[in-house]
Structures are given as C-alpha cells and as structure tokens.
Image 1 (cartoon, rainbow over the protein chains, first blue to last red):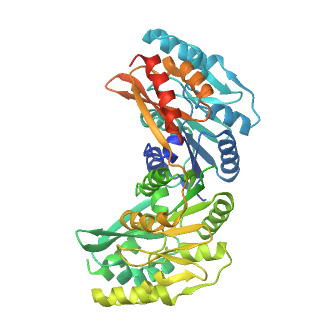
Image 2 (image 1 turned 45 degrees about the horizontal axis):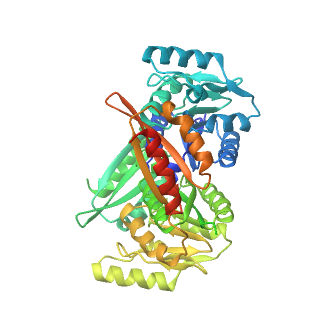
Image 3 (image 1 turned 180 degrees about the vertical axis):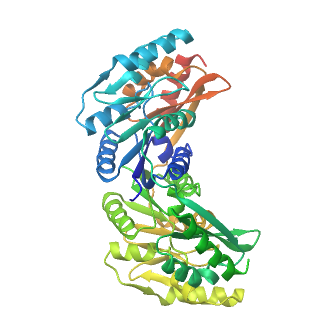
Length: 240
Length: 240
C-alpha cells in the first residue's frame, strides 16, 4: 500500500520578505520521512486571507494531511484560525476548552488574559485541540488539516503532539555515497541504475568544495534489501 | 503603481525528504525585497513531471515573474528544462549557443562533453540564456519564468545575472523594534497602529530566550516618512 501523502503550508509575510529564514519545513520534512508519510508539496503564502483559504482548500483536497505553521498568535496579523474556519465553512469563536487552558496558564504566570490573548482560544467548531507544552495556546486539527504555531520551538512541540495520532506508512530508508567525480561522469551509469531499480528513488546532489567537484548519490526506498542491492552495485561501479 | 509580483518554485525530492535544508528561498526573498519585487508565494514540489508542469503553469499565469531552482543538471532526475518546455508547448533540444558554452568549458577543463553533460545544453526554443559564472552550464528565461540551478552557489550567481534585467519597484523599507513584553501585552496597541497606518505592513514576531518573552515588531512600507512616523508612535507607546 502506498504511504499517506502530506502537504505543508507555511504562512507568514516574514518568510516571503526574507526577514526570517524558515526552519519548520526542514524539521517537518525529516519528521514525516521517519514515520513514512510522504511530504509531496510545500507552499508558502503571505498573511493574506484569500491566499490562505485558497491554499488550504487546494492542499486539503489533494493530500491525506496538511500541516500549517504560523499565524495563530494574539496579534492583528494572526488570521490563520479564522481562514481555516472559512475554508471549511465552520463556525469559529472563543471555545470553552481552549479558554480554560489559557485561563489556567495566565493564572499561573500572573499575566492578564486580555482580549488579544483570548484570540488564541478561537477554535473552529468540530476541531480537536493540539497540545502545546511550550506556551499553552493550542493548535487544532480540523478534517485533515493540522494547524500549528510558527515559532519553531512551539511548532516542533506541536508536531510531536500530532504525529503519534496519525497512521504512518513504511519509513523511507536511505543510503548515500559520496563520490569524488563530477556529476557528468557518473550520470550515464546512474540513469541505467535508476531504470533497473525503478522501485527506488535515486538522487544525485552535486557539490563543489575547495575546487573539488563531487556528488552525493542518495538511494531511497521502502525495502531495505533493494536499497542494499542498488547501493552495492553503485559502490562496485564506482570502485569504492 | 504597485510593485511587480513574483513566485518561486523549488524543485527537488531532497528538500521534501528533509535530506537537504533549502537556502535558495531565503536568499531569493531577500534579493527581491531589495529591488522592490514582491515575493507572494513559494511552492516546493518533487522531481515529478506533472507536479512541475502544473505548478509552473499556475504560477506563471498568476504572477509577473516565476523563479525556479533545481533540476537542470546532467543526471536522470534533472527534468526541469523539459517540464518547462512542456508547460509552454515549446520545442526543446540541445541548442547551439548552450552547446558552444559547454564545449569551451570542457575543453578548458580537459573533461569530456559526454551525452549526460550535453543534456545541460537542452534549452527550449525562444528562451534566452542565463549566465552561470560558477560552472558554465546556463539557466534560461522563457516567457516570465527564470529557470536556475539548485546548488546554492550557482543559484545565487544566476540570480545576480537575472535581477539587473528586470524592472523592479520601490524597495520595501523596514524598521524593527525589539520589545521585552509578551506579544499579548502589546497586541491591542499594534492592532490600532495597523488600522491607522493601513498603507504599512506591521508584523509581530514573538521570541522566547532564556525564559524571557518578547517580540520583534517589524514595520514595512515603501514610504520612508510613513515608516518613520509609525515607528515613532510605537517607540513612544512602548517607552523605549
């Protein structure tokens, strides 16, 4: 059976303006690979309601899971929760369960649960909360969309809360070989290897370091024996 | 007049599997901001022909410019050039001008211009070449799509070749203030500031460092005097 598929939607002007270097995509990609969910597409959009709604609808229809990051804080530019509700025609308001979490948190810390912070308890009807052990304000899952924070520490904690609840597939196994020859020297052999092992993904990633040209060849697949066989053929051919 | 808009398409299994952390998006975002081209969307897709063709068509129709990275090397998984040709119904083959560049390069280096390397001279009819001062094999521009390499050093050199040929807009000016108060404390004021300065983009990016909660507030806009005015109001309100 094929692995479940996933897309990620990164939401935030700060990524598109180059102010912030996103790290959540790299983190999620690695996590999904480990549990056998195939990340097939990522989109990054601005804090723009139409862009968010359109992307959520398109990705939710096409993939088994959608993971979003960003836009669920207390400020005016945090519009993700309302956009997700709109994408699913769901009613949204401050919800009692999320409000109770925030009340307990701010009581503990001595800060005030003001109107801005209460925005973080806006959860669409029918959604289930995603635990946030870092800063309490929850994410949520509605249909096949998992809505999480953009701050990396919180995003990563929410991913750890969500992933165990999902059914994964066969983790992708991967082996790589570093070859100190130009990509163009080995391309013909790699093409024939890819044709022979058509159940595997064989990627070639060139590098240039201190004037030396080389390539990392990565062989990926769900069956360890097949990955081993292809890697043995590659290593023999390359004389390593 | 509004600034030109742009999208980026990152192509490569290695990004989606978490093997490689993309850096080209961050680089391009900063470069475009400097020349006043608004990066509105980024997509990341696999080395999959249909996914690449669909994304190129969608983005090319929607934005003034599309910048792609990845998949133009000599190996079997380098399918970007052929996909771009398909997206524009253009004929593609080894082209004399690109072939001449590669012949001169491999003559200089003493390596063989074999069939695999010759694939890097496959250029759609009607495209103009993008100079590659790092490793010679060119990128190309067809219609409003700029096709560039994935290796960061080469991508960055190609961006430097392309950007001066494009008409930019007003560079986005940006000022930021680091505030050692929780986002929820300042959200109400920021909301009113954003409403008053509706021609500006006011973003709030929370952080947590060594147990201290704070936020960087970033004010962006094309008119320096307006950004100054909003920043003065912010600084006064925050007592800094």
